[in-house]
Image (tube, rainbow, N blue to C red; front, side, top):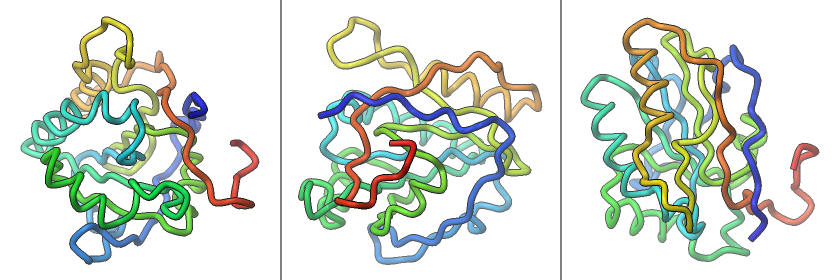
Length: 191
């Protein structure tokens, strides 16, 4: 496991389009969320200990903010051949077991991860109503092995600001987790 920080995509970046299959066999696209006041895109997977550490709070956070109109989508871009716990059929199990209420998509080509410059799992991106990036970074300061509770504080603060029409604080800390498991020869230049 290589410990990797998020790349901190520049604020103001326009959300990049995607069309990916979900765990129910439907294709989900960026445009499906066009009416939401905010969009949270999370790059995650099933096997990473950093995702396992926050997944229960992520499920709670998603439910809380979906009730307020926020669109949430999870994307798994890991090489499922090399990491069988991240295969689509295992994503179905993970979604049911954890109680994710958001679409959990599989980025088999890894092109969406590259477009977003996603580097680790988990990696969080918050877009405003115009789909401009206003937050990228950590969910909170908790990590496996430290004593900080998992609260989602940083992510919740960003989402609350967007929903209230306030600017999101530019003080943002990178997320930290396992590197995205790139297919051999598919590693992006930023990885």
